[in-house]
Amino acid sequence: MWRSGVSLIGAGPAATRFMLSNEGNRADPTPLAFWTTVQHGADRDRHIADCTFADFQIDGSGVAMAEYSYLAKGLGLQYVVRGIFRNLYIHHTAATGLGCDFLQDSLIDGVVVVGCGRLDNGEQIGGAGIGIGIGGWGGEERLTIANCTALANGTNGIFLELQKDYWDRPRGYRIVGCHSQGNRFGISDWGADGLIVSACTMTGNLETGFDVSAQGTASVAGRGGLLTDCVIDGNVRDGVSIGNSPGPYTVRGNRISGNGQHGYHARDLRRGYQGPIRDVVIESNEFWGNGLDAVRIDHQMTDAVLLNNRIRNNGRQCAEGTGGTGDAVRYGERSLVDRSANWPHDGHRGKVLRVGRSVAMVAANTGDELTLAPVRPDAFSAWSGDVPPPGCGYELAAAPLRRAGITINAPFDSATVRGNRIWDNLDDQTQTHGLWITERGSCVGCRVEDNDLAGNADDGMRLDTPPVGGRWRDNHVDSDWS
Image 1: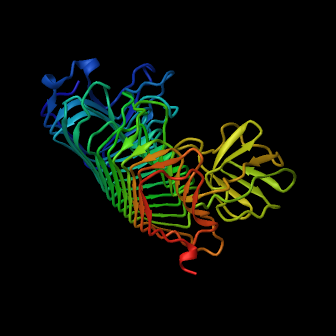
Image 2 (image 1 turned 60 degrees about the vertical axis):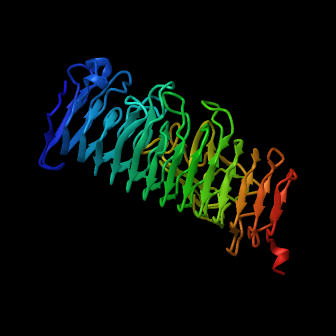
Image 3 (image 1 turned 90 degrees about the vertical axis):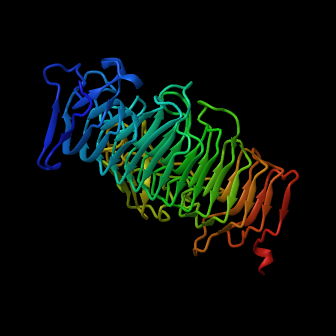
């Protein structure tokens, strides 16, 4: 049981190491320090204050449990005032590494979390590198997370999660200058109001680089946040995903590149808020080299603004469906080699590879080799089962025929799309269209003006559903330049 005014300060992560173990009682989650509502009656009136945790390492690899417990953290404190967590190295805990809730006037700085959440199956509570429960103090909770690194953690690298659906979404959170790599999600906003995420890198995450959704405990997505000046690159599926949020949200000045599927994806996970996402701003971003559409709208949106984005050379997942078997086919823990193949570079990136009943995700490919993403963070293998034997037959589905800069596949009302440059300047063009409204999509009362759509593989604009009302003018396609 922790108490106010008590600090734990080591001589540095290499010199001071706490090795957690529950060998005597495998049902005991054994965090290093904890102060919680359930175990200790923590609340606003019974909080702890003025505690510092700094300059040490927590090794959680010695904790084993027959059944997963979200309490098996490195640090698990609730209702903390003026807490400081600095220069910590926390790794391989069974649940979240630094899993503290309701931090007021607090700072998390220079914390490195690696391989935490190792007993979480990816769908359970917690299991993150840095996981902060929010809402216990009401509408204002002041916390800065700065200069942290989250690598290969079970669910999120860093996330904020509203704990009760009837609580106010709190303001006052900032995530600045952090790096999140190889987690299931890089950084997630699952319930804050006005979260600021700035100057961060989110790379190689298995699901999404930056996620705003209702996947948290309270089924409440964040809103009113700002995602600015970040590099969101090489995530296996989407770069930025925002869904089941009422909005608003601002995505400005980011590099969103090389993701296996979509750069920005508005989607409905059938959980939480079901109405239209309102007042989203996507401005002055660089979208390039993403596997499918740079911007994909699969959830109803109202009053969105897409302004001054540069969208080029997307649709890289262009390879036809294929398969193979026989002596030329060999499998590794995270690879497939087919010496008879001649695939386009990264033409299968973001696809599902099927070998019998086993599946894996393609992270990249050369002409005859697929590099596969790990089946879960910190895993050695990419396969859902055993590594297939040599010569076993495999299947890769065909890429979608149309891969546009902006694809509207849901109601898109009263939107402004202006000043965007959307093109493909590679010799082998893969971005088929600049703007595409699908048969399921619609544009009602939109202002689509002054966009340069020249230079795509097929056409600048494809309207399978004609727009209704609004203003469509001064949009330039190839015929305007010939």
